[in-house]
Length: 353
Image (cartoon, rainbow, N blue to C red; front, side, top):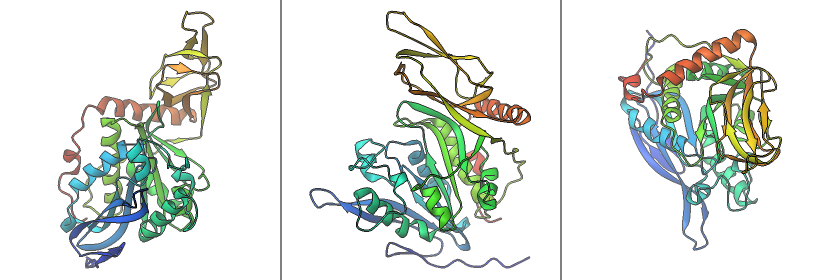
Protein backbone atom coordinates (compact mmCIF):
# COMPACT_ATOMS: atom_id res chain seq x y z
CA UNK A 1 0.00 0.00 0.00
CA UNK A 2 1.34 3.41 -0.98
CA UNK A 3 2.40 5.60 1.91
CA UNK A 4 0.10 8.56 2.54
CA UNK A 5 1.95 11.83 2.05
CA UNK A 6 1.80 14.34 4.88
CA UNK A 7 0.24 17.69 4.05
CA UNK A 8 1.95 21.09 4.19
CA UNK A 9 1.10 24.41 5.78
CA UNK A 10 -1.54 26.19 3.67
CA UNK A 11 -1.25 29.96 3.17
CA UNK A 12 -4.07 32.27 2.10
CA UNK A 13 -4.51 36.04 2.47
CA UNK A 14 -1.28 36.19 4.44
CA UNK A 15 -2.50 33.67 7.01
CA UNK A 16 -0.75 30.33 7.55
CA UNK A 17 -2.90 27.33 8.43
CA UNK A 18 -0.80 24.54 9.98
CA UNK A 19 -1.30 20.89 9.11
CA UNK A 20 -4.26 19.34 10.92
CA UNK A 21 -5.73 22.69 11.97
CA UNK A 22 -8.37 25.17 10.89
CA UNK A 23 -8.28 28.96 10.73
CA UNK A 24 -10.83 31.67 10.03
CA UNK A 25 -9.44 34.55 7.99
CA UNK A 26 -10.85 37.74 6.54
CA UNK A 27 -10.22 38.60 2.90
CA UNK A 28 -10.57 42.40 2.82
CA UNK A 29 -12.39 43.42 -0.36
CA UNK A 30 -13.61 46.99 0.15
CA UNK A 31 -14.35 49.83 2.50
CA UNK A 32 -17.73 51.20 3.51
CA UNK A 33 -18.53 54.92 3.27
CA UNK A 34 -17.27 55.21 6.85
CA UNK A 35 -13.89 53.74 5.78
CA UNK A 36 -14.64 50.65 7.89
CA UNK A 37 -13.18 47.57 6.21
CA UNK A 38 -15.52 45.07 4.58
CA UNK A 39 -14.18 41.54 4.23
CA UNK A 40 -15.19 38.08 3.02
CA UNK A 41 -15.08 35.47 5.83
CA UNK A 42 -13.12 32.36 4.83
CA UNK A 43 -12.55 29.19 6.86
CA UNK A 44 -9.64 26.95 5.87
CA UNK A 45 -9.56 23.37 7.15
CA UNK A 46 -6.09 22.03 6.40
CA UNK A 47 -6.01 18.25 6.58
CA UNK A 48 -3.26 16.15 8.07
CA UNK A 49 -2.48 14.48 4.75
CA UNK A 50 -1.94 15.83 1.23
CA UNK A 51 -4.81 15.94 -1.24
CA UNK A 52 -7.02 18.27 -3.30
CA UNK A 53 -7.92 21.83 -2.34
CA UNK A 54 -11.72 22.04 -2.55
CA UNK A 55 -13.49 25.41 -2.48
CA UNK A 56 -17.13 25.36 -1.37
CA UNK A 57 -18.58 28.83 -1.90
CA UNK A 58 -22.05 30.31 -1.42
CA UNK A 59 -23.93 33.60 -1.75
CA UNK A 60 -22.20 34.91 -4.83
CA UNK A 61 -25.71 36.31 -5.13
CA UNK A 62 -26.20 37.91 -1.73
CA UNK A 63 -29.83 36.85 -1.23
CA UNK A 64 -29.23 33.14 -1.88
CA UNK A 65 -29.11 31.79 1.66
CA UNK A 66 -29.41 27.99 1.39
CA UNK A 67 -25.73 27.70 0.53
CA UNK A 68 -24.76 29.80 3.55
CA UNK A 69 -26.39 27.28 5.87
CA UNK A 70 -25.03 24.33 3.88
CA UNK A 71 -21.46 25.62 4.31
CA UNK A 72 -22.03 26.04 8.06
CA UNK A 73 -23.26 22.47 8.39
CA UNK A 74 -20.42 21.11 6.25
CA UNK A 75 -17.77 22.82 8.38
CA UNK A 76 -19.27 21.30 11.53
CA UNK A 77 -18.80 17.81 10.07
CA UNK A 78 -15.20 17.94 8.82
CA UNK A 79 -12.34 17.05 11.17
CA UNK A 80 -8.93 18.30 9.95
CA UNK A 81 -7.21 15.34 11.59
CA UNK A 82 -9.22 12.96 9.38
CA UNK A 83 -9.02 14.99 6.18
CA UNK A 84 -6.87 14.59 3.11
CA UNK A 85 -6.17 17.87 1.39
CA UNK A 86 -7.72 21.21 2.25
CA UNK A 87 -11.28 22.49 2.46
CA UNK A 88 -11.70 26.21 1.76
CA UNK A 89 -15.20 27.28 2.84
CA UNK A 90 -16.69 30.68 1.95
CA UNK A 91 -20.30 30.98 3.16
CA UNK A 92 -20.78 34.55 1.87
CA UNK A 93 -18.91 35.78 -1.19
CA UNK A 94 -21.11 38.80 -1.99
CA UNK A 95 -20.95 40.44 1.42
CA UNK A 96 -22.52 43.67 0.09
CA UNK A 97 -25.59 41.85 -1.21
CA UNK A 98 -25.83 39.66 1.89
CA UNK A 99 -25.98 42.69 4.19
CA UNK A 100 -28.71 44.30 2.08
CA UNK A 101 -30.59 41.04 1.30
CA UNK A 102 -29.94 41.70 -2.39
CA UNK A 103 -28.77 39.59 -5.30
CA UNK A 104 -26.62 42.44 -6.56
CA UNK A 105 -23.82 44.75 -5.51
CA UNK A 106 -24.27 48.48 -4.76
CA UNK A 107 -23.48 49.31 -8.42
CA UNK A 108 -26.38 46.98 -9.43
CA UNK A 109 -23.98 44.59 -11.13
CA UNK A 110 -24.21 40.82 -10.89
CA UNK A 111 -21.04 39.44 -9.28
CA UNK A 112 -21.49 36.19 -11.20
CA UNK A 113 -21.08 38.09 -14.46
CA UNK A 114 -17.99 40.00 -13.27
CA UNK A 115 -15.23 37.37 -13.02
CA UNK A 116 -12.25 37.38 -13.19
CA UNK A 117 -12.63 41.07 -12.42
CA UNK A 118 -10.02 43.81 -12.34
CA UNK A 119 -8.10 45.83 -9.77
CA UNK A 120 -9.37 49.21 -10.97
CA UNK A 121 -12.92 48.55 -12.19
CA UNK A 122 -16.31 48.85 -10.55
CA UNK A 123 -17.09 47.50 -7.09
CA UNK A 124 -18.20 44.25 -8.72
CA UNK A 125 -15.01 43.99 -10.78
CA UNK A 126 -12.79 44.68 -7.77
CA UNK A 127 -14.57 42.19 -5.50
CA UNK A 128 -14.48 39.56 -8.26
CA UNK A 129 -10.76 40.17 -8.80
CA UNK A 130 -9.86 39.94 -5.12
CA UNK A 131 -11.90 36.78 -4.60
CA UNK A 132 -10.61 35.14 -7.78
CA UNK A 133 -6.96 35.94 -7.14
CA UNK A 134 -7.06 35.59 -3.35
CA UNK A 135 -9.13 32.40 -3.10
CA UNK A 136 -10.08 30.70 -6.37
CA UNK A 137 -6.55 30.38 -7.78
CA UNK A 138 -5.46 28.52 -4.64
CA UNK A 139 -7.98 25.74 -5.25
CA UNK A 140 -8.05 22.62 -7.41
CA UNK A 141 -11.84 21.94 -7.40
CA UNK A 142 -14.92 24.13 -6.76
CA UNK A 143 -18.52 23.60 -5.67
CA UNK A 144 -20.55 26.79 -6.13
CA UNK A 145 -23.88 26.82 -4.21
CA UNK A 146 -26.88 28.79 -5.52
CA UNK A 147 -30.67 29.02 -5.21
CA UNK A 148 -33.41 30.35 -7.45
CA UNK A 149 -33.93 34.10 -7.68
CA UNK A 150 -36.47 36.07 -5.61
CA UNK A 151 -39.98 34.60 -6.06
CA UNK A 152 -38.60 31.57 -7.91
CA UNK A 153 -37.74 28.15 -6.55
CA UNK A 154 -35.57 25.42 -8.05
CA UNK A 155 -35.64 21.65 -7.74
CA UNK A 156 -32.13 20.59 -6.58
CA UNK A 157 -30.03 20.34 -9.74
CA UNK A 158 -26.50 20.73 -11.07
CA UNK A 159 -25.25 22.92 -13.90
CA UNK A 160 -22.00 21.46 -15.18
CA UNK A 161 -19.76 21.19 -18.23
CA UNK A 162 -19.91 17.45 -18.88
CA UNK A 163 -17.24 17.75 -21.56
CA UNK A 164 -14.78 18.19 -18.69
CA UNK A 165 -14.21 14.63 -17.38
CA UNK A 166 -13.29 15.81 -13.87
CA UNK A 167 -16.43 17.96 -13.62
CA UNK A 168 -18.49 15.04 -14.95
CA UNK A 169 -17.07 12.71 -12.29
CA UNK A 170 -17.80 15.27 -9.57
CA UNK A 171 -21.39 15.56 -10.83
CA UNK A 172 -21.84 11.79 -10.68
CA UNK A 173 -20.53 11.74 -7.12
CA UNK A 174 -22.69 14.70 -5.98
CA UNK A 175 -25.88 12.78 -6.95
CA UNK A 176 -28.87 15.06 -7.56
CA UNK A 177 -32.14 14.31 -9.37
CA UNK A 178 -31.30 16.43 -12.43
CA UNK A 179 -28.00 17.31 -14.12
CA UNK A 180 -27.97 19.96 -16.83
CA UNK A 181 -25.10 19.97 -19.30
CA UNK A 182 -25.04 23.75 -19.31
CA UNK A 183 -22.94 26.10 -21.38
CA UNK A 184 -20.94 28.57 -19.32
CA UNK A 185 -21.81 32.26 -19.27
CA UNK A 186 -19.15 34.89 -19.78
CA UNK A 187 -18.06 36.40 -16.49
CA UNK A 188 -19.41 33.60 -14.32
CA UNK A 189 -17.25 31.91 -11.71
CA UNK A 190 -17.74 28.58 -13.49
CA UNK A 191 -16.61 29.95 -16.86
CA UNK A 192 -13.54 31.76 -15.59
CA UNK A 193 -12.42 29.02 -13.19
CA UNK A 194 -12.63 26.41 -15.95
CA UNK A 195 -10.50 28.67 -18.17
CA UNK A 196 -7.95 28.51 -15.35
CA UNK A 197 -8.15 24.70 -15.36
CA UNK A 198 -10.31 24.36 -12.22
CA UNK A 199 -13.38 22.08 -12.55
CA UNK A 200 -16.60 23.53 -11.13
CA UNK A 201 -20.03 22.25 -10.11
CA UNK A 202 -22.85 24.79 -9.80
CA UNK A 203 -25.61 23.56 -7.50
CA UNK A 204 -29.09 25.10 -7.55
CA UNK A 205 -31.79 24.39 -4.99
CA UNK A 206 -34.62 26.28 -3.30
CA UNK A 207 -35.53 29.96 -3.32
CA UNK A 208 -33.78 33.23 -2.45
CA UNK A 209 -34.20 34.67 1.06
CA UNK A 210 -35.56 31.34 2.35
CA UNK A 211 -34.09 28.30 4.07
CA UNK A 212 -35.19 25.11 2.31
CA UNK A 213 -34.16 22.20 4.59
CA UNK A 214 -34.32 19.60 1.82
CA UNK A 215 -32.19 21.66 -0.58
CA UNK A 216 -29.69 22.44 2.21
CA UNK A 217 -29.50 18.81 3.25
CA UNK A 218 -28.85 17.63 -0.29
CA UNK A 219 -26.17 20.32 -0.76
CA UNK A 220 -24.31 19.13 2.34
CA UNK A 221 -24.57 15.47 1.40
CA UNK A 222 -23.50 16.25 -2.16
CA UNK A 223 -20.40 18.07 -0.94
CA UNK A 224 -19.51 15.15 1.32
CA UNK A 225 -19.95 12.69 -1.55
CA UNK A 226 -17.64 14.74 -3.77
CA UNK A 227 -15.08 14.88 -0.97
CA UNK A 228 -15.21 11.10 -0.67
CA UNK A 229 -14.85 10.74 -4.44
CA UNK A 230 -11.78 13.01 -4.31
CA UNK A 231 -10.39 10.79 -1.51
CA UNK A 232 -10.54 13.70 0.94
CA UNK A 233 -12.74 11.63 3.28
CA UNK A 234 -13.01 7.91 3.91
CA UNK A 235 -15.15 6.33 1.21
CA UNK A 236 -18.35 4.52 2.09
CA UNK A 237 -19.80 1.52 0.31
CA UNK A 238 -22.56 3.09 -1.71
CA UNK A 239 -24.12 2.41 -5.07
CA UNK A 240 -24.21 5.74 -6.93
CA UNK A 241 -27.30 6.70 -8.86
CA UNK A 242 -27.09 6.87 -12.62
CA UNK A 243 -26.54 10.44 -13.81
CA UNK A 244 -29.61 11.59 -15.75
CA UNK A 245 -28.72 14.42 -18.10
CA UNK A 246 -31.27 16.93 -19.36
CA UNK A 247 -30.96 17.36 -23.12
CA UNK A 248 -32.26 20.92 -22.92
CA UNK A 249 -34.34 23.28 -20.79
CA UNK A 250 -36.68 26.19 -21.46
CA UNK A 251 -38.90 28.67 -19.63
CA UNK A 252 -42.66 28.77 -20.21
CA UNK A 253 -43.91 32.36 -20.05
CA UNK A 254 -47.15 34.11 -19.11
CA UNK A 255 -49.47 34.88 -22.00
CA UNK A 256 -51.45 37.59 -20.19
CA UNK A 257 -51.43 39.68 -17.01
CA UNK A 258 -53.27 38.67 -13.86
CA UNK A 259 -53.25 36.41 -10.82
CA UNK A 260 -51.31 33.20 -11.30
CA UNK A 261 -52.51 29.79 -10.02
CA UNK A 262 -50.07 26.94 -10.47
CA UNK A 263 -51.44 23.46 -11.21
CA UNK A 264 -48.11 21.59 -10.95
CA UNK A 265 -45.23 21.33 -8.48
CA UNK A 266 -41.47 20.96 -8.56
CA UNK A 267 -40.50 17.52 -9.83
CA UNK A 268 -43.78 16.89 -11.67
CA UNK A 269 -43.53 15.22 -15.06
CA UNK A 270 -45.84 16.99 -17.51
CA UNK A 271 -47.05 15.95 -20.94
CA UNK A 272 -47.22 18.10 -24.05
CA UNK A 273 -50.28 20.35 -23.91
CA UNK A 274 -50.87 19.82 -20.18
CA UNK A 275 -52.15 22.85 -18.26
CA UNK A 276 -49.40 24.15 -15.98
CA UNK A 277 -51.26 27.16 -14.57
CA UNK A 278 -54.24 29.45 -14.98
CA UNK A 279 -54.01 33.24 -15.15
CA UNK A 280 -56.98 35.56 -14.86
CA UNK A 281 -57.96 39.08 -13.85
CA UNK A 282 -58.81 39.62 -10.15
CA UNK A 283 -62.53 39.67 -11.01
CA UNK A 284 -62.20 36.30 -12.71
CA UNK A 285 -62.49 37.51 -16.30
CA UNK A 286 -60.31 36.53 -19.28
CA UNK A 287 -58.89 33.35 -17.77
CA UNK A 288 -56.23 31.58 -19.81
CA UNK A 289 -54.31 28.34 -19.36
CA UNK A 290 -50.53 28.07 -19.66
CA UNK A 291 -49.69 24.86 -21.50
CA UNK A 292 -46.52 22.75 -21.56
CA UNK A 293 -44.88 23.02 -25.01
CA UNK A 294 -43.69 19.41 -24.80
CA UNK A 295 -43.13 16.60 -22.32
CA UNK A 296 -40.70 17.47 -19.55
CA UNK A 297 -40.07 17.77 -15.81
CA UNK A 298 -40.67 20.93 -13.77
CA UNK A 299 -37.30 21.98 -12.33
CA UNK A 300 -38.20 25.54 -11.39
CA UNK A 301 -41.21 27.83 -11.11
CA UNK A 302 -42.36 31.25 -9.99
CA UNK A 303 -43.76 31.40 -6.46
CA UNK A 304 -45.32 34.89 -6.63
CA UNK A 305 -49.03 34.57 -7.56
CA UNK A 306 -48.94 37.70 -9.75
CA UNK A 307 -47.89 37.61 -13.38
CA UNK A 308 -47.22 40.09 -16.14
CA UNK A 309 -47.38 39.01 -19.74
CA UNK A 310 -43.98 37.56 -20.67
CA UNK A 311 -42.95 36.61 -17.13
CA UNK A 312 -41.00 33.33 -16.88
CA UNK A 313 -43.31 31.02 -14.91
CA UNK A 314 -42.04 27.44 -15.29
CA UNK A 315 -38.61 26.03 -16.03
CA UNK A 316 -38.90 22.66 -17.77
CA UNK A 317 -36.13 20.13 -18.39
CA UNK A 318 -36.40 17.82 -21.38
CA UNK A 319 -35.01 14.28 -21.57
CA UNK A 320 -34.92 11.38 -23.94
CA UNK A 321 -37.79 9.05 -22.99
CA UNK A 322 -35.63 6.52 -21.14
CA UNK A 323 -33.85 9.37 -19.38
CA UNK A 324 -37.16 10.92 -18.37
CA UNK A 325 -38.21 7.65 -16.75
CA UNK A 326 -34.95 7.46 -14.79
CA UNK A 327 -35.09 11.14 -13.83
CA UNK A 328 -38.66 10.77 -12.61
CA UNK A 329 -37.70 7.75 -10.50
CA UNK A 330 -34.82 9.67 -8.90
CA UNK A 331 -36.99 12.73 -8.30
CA UNK A 332 -39.70 10.63 -6.69
CA UNK A 333 -37.11 9.04 -4.40
CA UNK A 334 -35.76 12.47 -3.51
CA UNK A 335 -39.21 13.86 -2.74
CA UNK A 336 -40.01 10.82 -0.59
CA UNK A 337 -36.81 11.32 1.40
CA UNK A 338 -36.94 15.08 2.01
CA UNK A 339 -38.22 14.61 5.53
CA UNK A 340 -35.08 12.66 6.46
CA UNK A 341 -32.84 15.62 7.22
CA UNK A 342 -30.20 14.11 9.50
CA UNK A 343 -26.96 14.72 7.60
CA UNK A 344 -24.74 13.26 10.35
CA UNK A 345 -26.06 9.76 9.75
CA UNK A 346 -24.90 10.08 6.14
CA UNK A 347 -21.41 11.09 7.21
CA UNK A 348 -20.79 8.57 10.00
CA UNK A 349 -17.06 8.88 10.69
CA UNK A 350 -15.18 11.10 8.24
CA UNK A 351 -11.58 10.18 7.66
CA UNK A 352 -9.01 8.77 5.29
CA UNK A 353 -9.83 6.45 2.44
